[in-house]
Image (cartoon, rainbow, N blue to C red):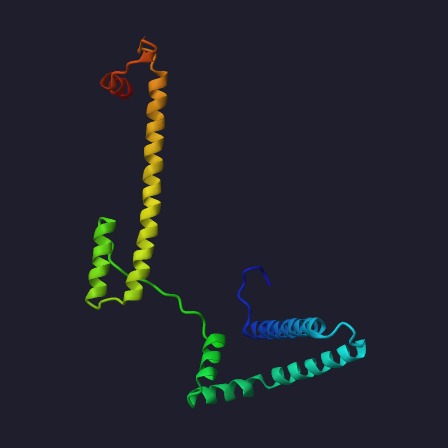
Length: 192
């Protein structure tokens, strides 16, 4: 099959199944290694190797039991959450729902001050929440800091260029150990 050609439905199902099996095997291996590590770190140093192996074997059996019954455990957890068990609901939400990304929408004005005023007005009138307004103001503050930094860099660059132009101006004659510079003459020379 040439590279980039679409896979057949059967081929895709087989690949997906292999990926799931490989993922489950990796998950079990990681869990087993973590449990073995925990057993070794929690066990007293003088515990016989047979006792460690026994604890490891029992832990593996418990893990396998959980993995084999994951669907039933999840269903029971959902049932408890639906009956009002807050801890079960929280566990389900934390483990199975993706983290919600917050999108802030607000109107940008020509200036940061005008935008900030608009955000405060929207929050005061209930158009956006106080948390959203606070987050937007935080973003606006960071953007203003970046803008100010850029403006300072531009100003420093311009001043550096001006100092270099002054240093390279050969038409100026020193008076009393200092150079007197005619700024209008300098500006005219720079334009030419």
